[in-house]
Structure formats: structure tokens, C-alpha cells
Amino acid sequence: MVFSLKKHIYFVISQGRLKATELESGNSLEESLATVVHPRTPIGNFDNLETIFSRAIKELVPKNFFLASPCIYLHLLDEVDGGYTQIEIRAFKEAALGAGAREVHMPDSRTLLTAEQLLAKEFRELDDSF
Image 1 (tube, rainbow, N blue to C red):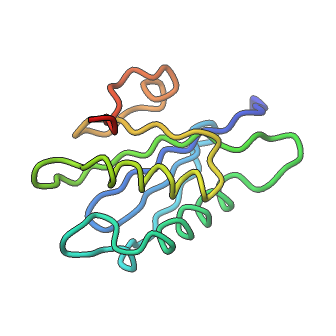
Image 2: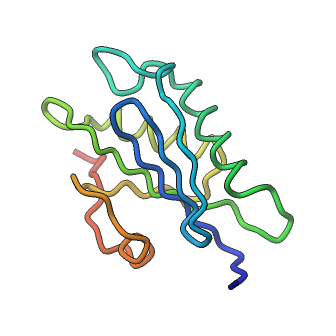
Image 3: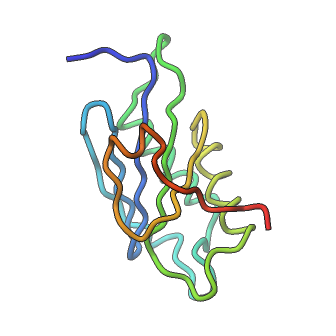
């Protein structure tokens, strides 16, 4: 087992569910996002989303003096009419940062990515600067 001071978590949001996978160990968890679903926007309740992200981070990467806060890859797989707005992209990023992420990357892809693709940053990011 390789010990790394940097941790990376892949958050996949699809169909009202969050699947979080810690890339170094492969440990994962799934959680319902029912409390944040809203008919007109992908984020109905920002505070609940941040709490869910925080819980996932704490479970997958427990606090340790030697570990830096994790890097999050936040992948939105659900299609949204007209695409995601700047505000929605920024809200997802801010929720992950507020939950304890060191940095947040948001792949712009309709397919799941491998750990190798994520760690090598072989993807285009969602653009929040229109």
C-alpha cells in the first residue's frame, strides 16, 4: 500500500444520488441527494449539499495532521436544459470547498472517467466564466 499525503475524491452526481470514491484506496460510498433536489435548479438547498459533501469527505478521508485537504473531482452527469449556468457551477464548487476540499475540478463529460484520467487531468473542465 502506497502512503500519499494527497488525497483525491471523485464525486459523481447523477439521478439524485452522490457516489464518492477516494481514488488512492478505491473506497467509495453512495448517498441520496433527495434533500437538495429542486424542480427548477440542480441545487435546491445549498447548505444540505455542503453537509452531504462534508460527510462524504470525512468518511473517506478522516482528519489527519499529515494529510492535506482532499482535491475533489465533481462530475455532474445529469443533463440540464441549456447546460449548467455559471451560478450553478460556482455553487457546486463553493459547496465542495466549504465542505473541506482543497481544490475542485469539474469535468465536462457525459461519461464516467477513470482514476488515471482524473489524476492526469485528461478532461475538459466545465466553464464557469461566460
